[in-house]
Length: 298
Image 1 (cartoon, rainbow, N blue to C red):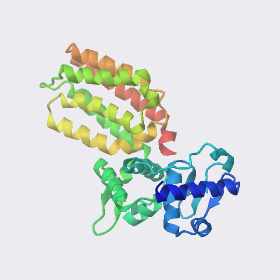
Image 2 (image 1 turned 180 degrees about the vertical axis):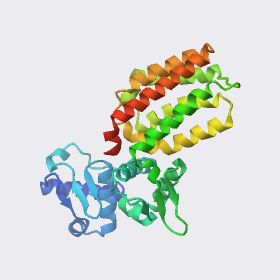
Image 3 (image 1 turned 90 degrees about the vertical axis):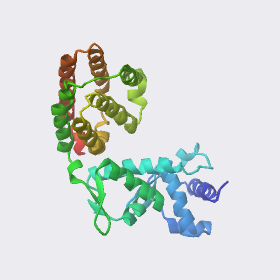
Image 4 (image 1 turned 30 degrees about the horizontal axis):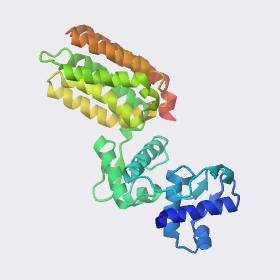
């Protein structure tokens, strides 16, 4: 058993011994005193418990027990830290959610993010590299990072769909449009996967990426580099609000049916009808997003 895992086990045992209720404040210094440890390993152990959903960390307040001691009866005593990639992904969604709720400053330092999300320096850099690549954060000249206000309002996602409505159907009518059969089959397989249960079980990342791959595959078939570059830029920066919209997945079965119809039309080289179907698909998505604007803004 590693030192980290051993400290986690000792904290779990203290919670059970003290019969702590849900919401109890777990003070790192008090735990360190009782375990005769420094605060550093205790904070590391509390971070592991947070990653497993046993405690919750509130900025500037510390850690709080999520459930009463008796609910921990089934919790293993040898909880290990998640893989580094898992931690960065968890913190990515936490950061995105807090940014959308207005709980995170639009300008902040790496040190603030590292402390707020209990990350190592390498993990913090990996997190920032991901959001920078997606286009909703950039390094400030000299010091710190700045998030894009463009992608923190519901209107931003709706505006991105209006741009796509103007661009994507036109791409299907380009003179050089040609879509290969393996691309069609790959797109069909992705839609069937979703209809066979993936809508409910895929992560937000997976759902977003499957949709992006479908639409980018159609635009790439146009052979027009200006269309391709524009749609890829839009897809990078809309990812943040796209995740929030996935709280309502009821519309995804309809999306899959519409995607399959568009693929069938393209396979038969009925591009004008496919462009009309694609425009109708994007308009219906835009209407659905307008109806759930409360989710986007919450």
